Image 1 (cartoon, rainbow, N blue to C red):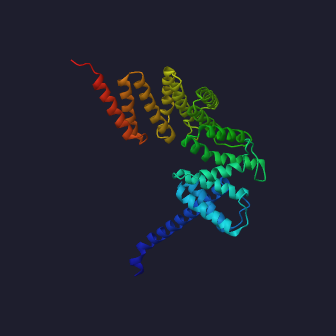
Image 2: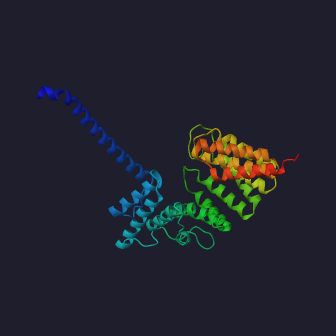
Image 3: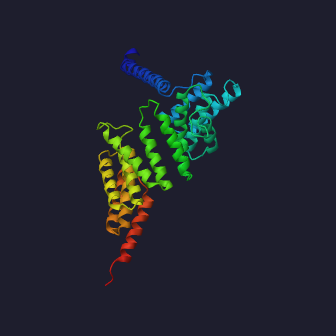
Length: 338
C-alpha cells in the first residue's frame, strides 16, 4: 500500500505547501492593507470603541482602495449610529464632523445630495464672514475639514447652478490649503474648479486669469514619464481655457488650446483621465469647427471621437452618433443642387 501511495505523497506535500503560501499571502495582504489604511487614512484618536473603528476602517477601504460608495456610506452610517448610541462624543466633536463630511461625500458619489448636512457642517468651521473658525481643537483640523467639505460641496453647488456659492467654497478651501502640507495636487484642482465656477457665472476674465495661472505653475513642474495624479492635469486646464476662449469669441485661440491639449493626452494613452479629456477635446473641436462653418472638419473630429471610443470606451457613443448624423444631414442640405 505504501508503494502505491508513494507517487502521491509529493503532490500532497506540494499542495499543502501551496495552501500554506496562499494563506500566508492572504494574511500578508490583510496586514499590509490595514497598515496602509492606518497610515494613510487614520481614524480620529477620540474614537476608542473597537467596533466603531472597525466600521470606519471598512469605510476607508471602500472609499480609497476598493471603491464602493454605497458600502462606504453604510459603514459610515452604522459608525455614526454607534457613536450616538454610546453618547461619548458630541455632534460638534472633530471625530463626528469628519464622519459627516465623509458620509456626505460617499452619498454624492452615488447621486444622493446631502446638501443640508454639508451646509450645517460647513457652518461649524466657517463663519458668516467667511473666516475659518468654530468647532474643533485646532486651526489645522478646521482647515482640513474645510477641504474635506469643499471636495463635495463645491461640485454640488456647480451642479445645482449655485456658481457664486462654489466660488466662495473653493476660495475658502484655497485659503485653508495654504497652511496644509499635502502631497496631492489639490491646490491646482481647486484653482481649476474656481476658474470653472467663474466661467459658469459669466466672469470669463477671472476664469481665464485663474486657469492661465495654474497652467503656468503646472508647466514649471519637472517633466516625468511616471503616471501620477498630476498626469494630464495640464490638458484638462487647456480644455477649460479653450472653452473659456470660445465663450469670449476668441475662436482661433480656442482651437490652439484644444489642439495643444490633444498633444498632451496623446502621450498618455490608456490613462483614464487622459482618455476622458481626449474625448472632450475632440467634441470641443467638432463644435468649434461647426461654429466656423467647417462641417467636414467637424465630422472628422466626431469620427475620431468614435475611433477613440472603440479604443478606450471613453466618451458617449450615442451622442457622437447623433452628432454625426446631424452634421451629415446639414452637409446634405447645404450641398449645391444640380
